Image (tube, rainbow, N blue to C red):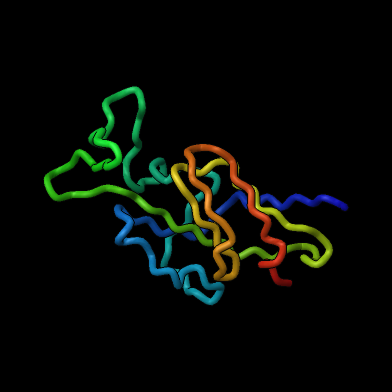
Length: 142
């Protein structure tokens, strides 16, 4: 089998929410979804360095109260902070998907990621800054 590599680095459509409840509706995973009003963000990248949310450093006190298994933002009473970022990219493969097995490799994701291809959830990964790989062969179309 021949291996081909397609780098997906570059501009992606991006929608940020300060808390999970405000994330985009699941319809954003559909190929037909109109994301033209979403921002553009560089991938790979860190959304905090692009003005979304704020960086969390481990060499200073946590911004979250340590109360396992509950973790809450140490902000004003009644506030919450559990940011979610939704990324979208339409990719046209420069080869026939029928000719190859196709894997999606993510070099690192902070916290957790759901991966959708053409509206279908193809995988989930959870752990901070570790790579994740998904076999997306049967979900890719020409």
